[in-house]
Structures are given as structure tokens and as C-alpha cells.
Image 1 (cartoon, rainbow, N blue to C red):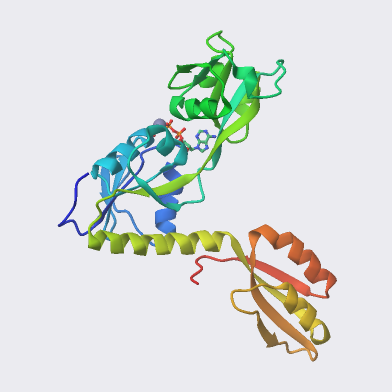
Image 2: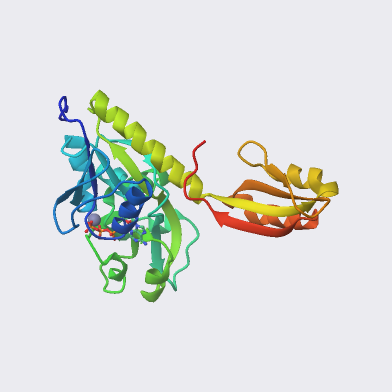
Length: 291
Ligand code: ATP
Ligand code: ZN
């Protein structure tokens, strides 16, 4: 752990290439942070925020942050739990969602984790799998391999595997079926323990921006026309940030209503609005949302 008494910027580690790279760069851009030079280099400076970006293998990011070589990092929760480093999760980032699952050959019957008793499991995540087996009271042999885990049962290397899954198509193509989800993951922002006061402040600014981007993604701006005699019912359906904006339309007896809807209950509320007499409903994306 390296305390950075004099450092007046944040050093952020992100994945150099792979599944998290593009979304990490996109998030920085959405936070209004421009990165100057290309990704072929090991590091790059932001032009309009005191931030330096290091491009690394995702597996190395927890170690770099623990050691204070980088101050913060964007990395999958799966990697943090597997590496077991002294870093704190400061914010969930909402991308890189996947699950770590046990899969077995399609033709086999599975009723509980007892299936795994005495079996051989191939995985790149021995720590998380071990932890799971202990919780289940199951003893199995873990065979650690670093890639192409899904072919292990087919070549007789293991009876089961534990690997990251998003759609399940890779498992299917290799004659496997997912039987147990043992860990759910997404990309998170981690931080080292010894940030100086300037860096703490910078991190607060960055997290404030990330939260505004995340909130905007989960919400939509909605505009609709409502007959005035239905306004009360329609307004009662809309949560809004405070309360909806209501403006008179040029047509007598009608109003325009503006509000913000959460993605989760979106279709439900739209249907109810239509039933309540709303017309000309427009839904538009929100770029940033500051509460
Ligand atoms: P690196 O070269 O940086 O070591 P990698 O091959 O280990 O890359 P990627 O496959 O690029 O890693 O995945 C990086 C992270 O993306 C994973 O650790 C996980 O958090 C996340 N992820 C999201 N969906 C998936 C998926 N379907 N399969 C694998 N990882 C996924
Ligand atoms: Zn990796």
C-alpha cells in the first residue's frame, strides 16, 4: 500500500482489451472525460479531468490497486473475489454482467449440489468454487485451467465445469447444461486504501458523474397529452423526479404532461396511462440525470 501524499490525480486501471474494455472507455466518455492517446500504449492521460488511465489485463487490476500502483480500477466482481485482494468496492458500474455457473454434460441427471461429491471440476475460479463447495458441504476435486474450460468434460479432463456464462450458447455448443449459478457478477469500481484527500475528492466527483450516467440509463423521459378531466388519474400514475410538469396545449381542454419513468415499471405504467386516456405518448432517452 503506497500512500500518495503528493499525487493530485487519480490513476485508473482498466482492461486493455477484452469484454470490459469498450464499456469502460464508453463510461469515461459518458462522464465527460476525454482520453488523449491511443490504447496501444500502456497508459493515457485524460485531457479534461485529473485522471491517468492504465491499460492492463483484468486479472492484474486488483493487485495493482492493492499495491497503490493504480488508485482505482474498473474490473469484474468475479476477478476481485477470486484474487481476494485488499481493495474496496466503491461503486457498481452496471456493465459486464455475467454469472459463474456449474455446468455438466447435457445427458446427465442433476438434482442437487450432491451430484458434485467426489467429482472433478474444471475451472479458472478455484477460490470461488472452493468457497461454494464448502458452503454446500461437498468435497470435490478442483482442476484449475486458465482457458477453454468448456471443453474439459468432452476430452475427459473433468466431470463438470464452473465458468462464466452470459447467454449460455457456449455451454450448449459444447454439449453442456448449466445446473447451478454460484456467483453473479458485474463490473465495479475498486479503490485502494491509501487515497490522499485530493484523490478522495476527485473520486467523489467521478462517482457523482458515474451515478448520473447510470441513473439516466435506467430512466426515460416521457411526454404525453391528456384530456384535462383525466389529468388527476394520469398524474397519479407518474412517479417523476418531484412531480410531473403540466403545460396547457393549444387545443382547449388538453394538457401536455412531462415526467421521468424507471425502466423497471416502464411498460406497466405506459399501459395504465393509455387506459387512463393518455394520447400521443413520446418516450425519449435521458443523457444525464442529476438528483
Ligand atoms: P484479459 O486478457 O484482460 O485477462 P480475459 O480473457 O480474462 O481478459 P474477458 O473474457 O475479456 O477476460 O472478460 C473480462 C470480464 O468480463 C470477466 O472477468 C467478467 O467479469 C466479464 N464478463 C462478462 N460477460 C462475460 C462472459 N460471457 N464470459 C466471460 N466474461 C464475461
Ligand atoms: Zn483475464
